Amino acid sequence: MARTNTYGHYCPAARTLEIVGEKWALLVVRDLLEQPQRFSDLMNSLGGITPKLLTARLRDLEAAGVIERDEQEGRRDVWYRITPTGEALTPVLRELVVWGVQFSPGPTDNERVSARSATASAVALFNSRRQFPPRPVTWEIACDTPSTRRMTFDGDRWRLVPVTADKPADLKIATSPGTWVSLIRGEPGDAATLFDRLHLTGDAEAIARCAAFFTGQERA
Image (cartoon, rainbow, N blue to C red; front, side, top):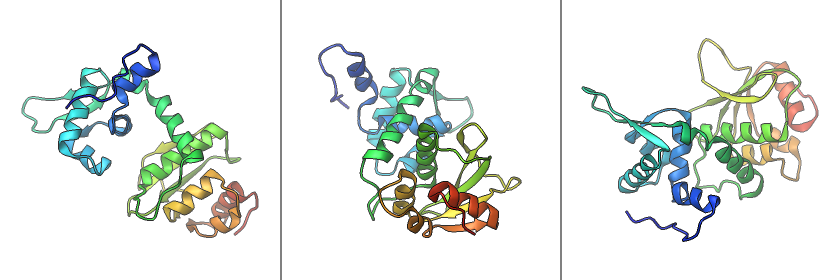
């Protein structure tokens, strides 16, 4: 597939966009930064990309040294993994997320918001703002799908962590995508009203601390 973003002059920013600026390219990098994936995994997580276009993006990113194929004799599946060159794009993607949460339009009614996107957006934004609770906490987030993701404040930074049965979250939060994005970005309006739209599962102390984090006032 022909490349469309050759700019015809040298600039480091232009060179970067020539490598990762094609549609879907950075989203492939985003997904592989989380963990190695198969072609079918990427098709499922990206949603909307065609097999032909995904093949082209994987080929381009591999040629640029951003990702690599993991093929083993006797194993049917081909896995794709990020390289150190690709890992160096982590702060670029993080800042894109922060900018997007703060300045781009929120999700529309017909846009799916995954638990991964919801938690990753909150983690990136809270760390950028240095918006931290007074003590460590782990929240499990669900938006419009049954899947959940966890985010934890470990006393230093917010981080994404695996969901494990042996370590229950302090609080489970279920809500609509629009409410969650409006709440974390701090849009003008009543934070308490947005907080009341959350469906919370946890003890009274965990709920009160979460309320204080978002609204400045503890509530049971």
